[in-house]
Image (cartoon, rainbow, N blue to C red; front, side):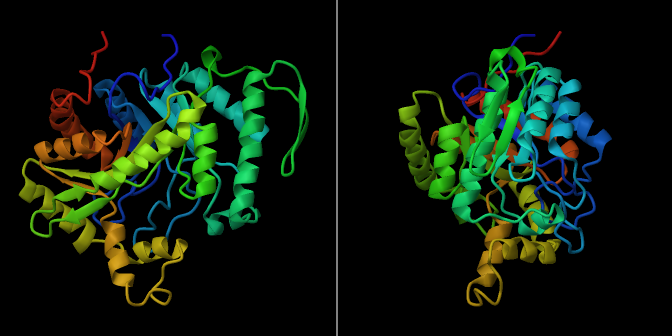
Length: 381
């Protein structure tokens, strides 16, 4: 089959991936009964369809406990390295990420697990690195959350150790401030003599520097500048997105290698704009799991007590982080506009991945091909 590494400078100008299908409800904080259950059989069938239809990647969320509320949003989830390994065994083209919290995974064990996945997928394994942020989950492991600067110090030592395990043939010692390893031996190496594709979502200066130094792409905010209350049409803030992409490109230029920018969006696509917005309002406004939304905001330090005057607006913003709501023409146009800013990939989510992906592939992907941001899919013999 040959090496199949995801690339930011080849193939589709806008790569598309599915975000969060290893967790119950995916990324949709809604109580509607058709929300994503994340069972294995549904997931396997959905990912095989994505593989056949040319979706570029699958990106899981690393979650260890849910958010409570009526739905316990993301309360049921599969561990992402094992999940990725299984999906790589039943697919042929698609890249499958694992999402790894560096403080929770011992680097020697993680390096071996990830190489195993990479050989199963013949070079289609990829890694989303997370330095850690969810204190409630860390307590499950008896691991204390480091201060912000030390998180990235530890994460740097962690990936340095993993890179050495993936590259060096001889035994070695690794003596850092946070990680000490002796007599390290790691065989085999990643598939095909190249390392997996890496992405990170660091937003702070330290996080962004970490991502650019170590990874192949960074997650960045893809925000909207307006939301039409009558039609549900979102207007991406293209100027801000373009400036953010340019900033990342300037910082990465010194590395003399391709570097990408990933965004994310929640998709609601129906045959007409009226149908799409009606379903969006039904799912995300009329049936929002408000307790889960409040918990999500609280984890980011936003409560009614801390921001009494703006809290309700913050709650609405969380619902409308970046919904792309519309008929196939609208959805394809908005994705193409985001691609025009230099964003190289979009990780998208649906309320029910298996139920909504076929329509998205049938109607939106051909429009993106005609817009010149996606290539036609080569059908396997």
